[in-house]
Image (tube, rainbow, N blue to C red; front, top):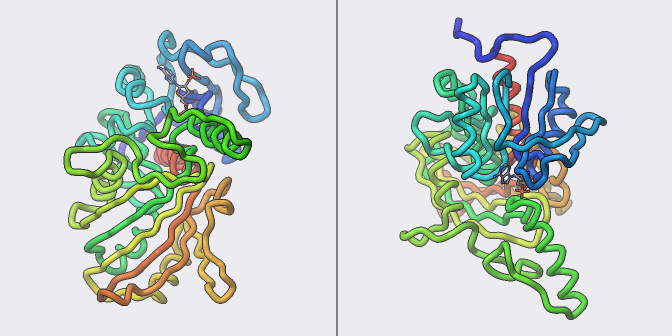
Amino acid sequence: MMESFLTPKEAGYRVAVVGATGAVGETMLEILAERKFPVAELIPLASSRSAGSTVEFAGDEYVVQDLATFDPTGLDIALFSAGGDTSLEHAPRFAEAGCYVIDNSSAWRMDDHIALVVPEVNPEALDMARVNRIIANPNCSTIQMVVALKPLHDAAPIKRVVVSTYQAVSGAGRKAMNELADQTRHLLNGQAFDVDVFPARIAFNVIPQIDSFLDDGYTKEERKMMDETRKIMGSDIAVTATTVRVPVFYGHSESVNVTFGAAMDADTARNLLAEAEGICVVDDPSNEDYPLASEAAGSDPVWVGRIRNDNSFKNSLHLWVVADNVRKGAALNAVQIAELLVSQS
Ligand code: A2P
């Protein structure tokens, strides 16, 4: 039998949430409570700016502590969602103190020695974390796509994926959500507005740029989707992405075109997806029924619809994949990884 990750603790584990005042951190706290994660002690951490403020966990108020001066000795698990620089600086210090770090930033995802895990897709990758104790949570757009692709790939190997995303502003944090709300209000009232978080006005607009541009013309967000999908599902799959920000608060939508190396059709795919863990199929064109970000928001599954044969190419399908980017795309996936650690302890 494999050596366990954590020493089993009847009374529960000491868990820290780093970035507890942020959009994802707040949802991590909610989901830990909702799923009755075995928490003996909860420690919310953030920057010195919000140290001393309080956050709610399971009906109680907890005082936020300053990450910079916090001593991680004795912690079992830390869920990090405070940006890449914070993770680079503090995750190693937590891991060296014996704590498992589940990191939502992109800082460690493509490190060959770091596990990049979606529990429904590649739980076996977690083994790598026995050595270095840092586990990376993939990019939100990657997570929902690989959950939908995995059951199909198991039945017929995927050769190529072409994806275009329609991503909600919550993926860019609290300031980004405020920017959409403020711009919308100001525009409707004929007032001047600020453009700060996004590269262009996001209210009543569609922006084909998420993160900065690389030399090859792709953006960093697109590069993340392509590289992370291959790290999780295998480098035999060709992936190309266009990532787009839309004026939606919660819920990323994706148009995914998939080509298989063996026979696959829409009916087979619909049946496979309907049986798969973590997926809900909503696909009834006769009733104009398909997944919507507004309905996926606040929910846990990855929703798949518009499943149809791509008549332009053999063994190819179109899928429409929607999920709550803050839940399955970030906080829920991180908590599911923590649950895997505990279940293997
Ligand atoms: P703070 O409230 O102290 O700024 P969001 O993505 O919604 O903007 O949230 C980012 C989260 O990351 C917040 O909880 C924020 O805390 C935290 N954070 C940002 N920078 C740091 C840092 N240098 N050290 C610790 N936490 C940080």
